[in-house]
Image (cartoon, rainbow, N blue to C red; front, top):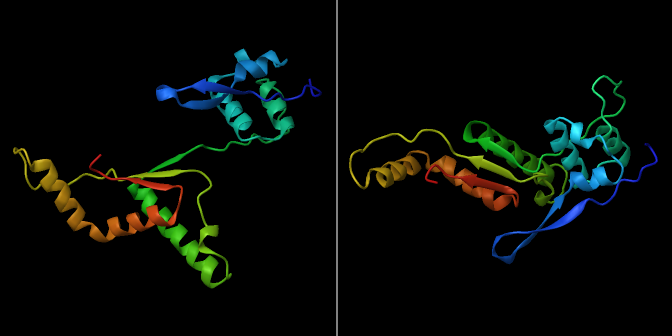
Length: 176
């Protein structure tokens, strides 16, 4: 089936509030001659959809769409995530690395800082425990969150800088 053309599998999708979206349809790929798709493991279907969405090499798409469990592997399977979700334990060091890379781009290479940008959206979830200083009252949560932001003000300023410096970097604070 190496001569089978990879079709454009994009399909419009109606969303809430009259919005429109796009999906990359595996049934459309199956209808184009890739009959083995329903037998693919779910995990490989997810990878295949990602490959279609990210316009992977047609030969790689073809190889995965025609996957056989015991066949010899000759091609890489590219996988591009659509989002990275990090907890603060790993996300803060990542942000520090991105900041250092920006400094190096500007100072050492004479390049614009905006050259350094995550390729996919990053959501950093501040998920550490908020210390409990007050409990059993209606204002306990807001009091404890305010204390959290006071205790870790420097970290939160750094995270706020990151959200402003990088277009694809977002922070979910502990109060949400």
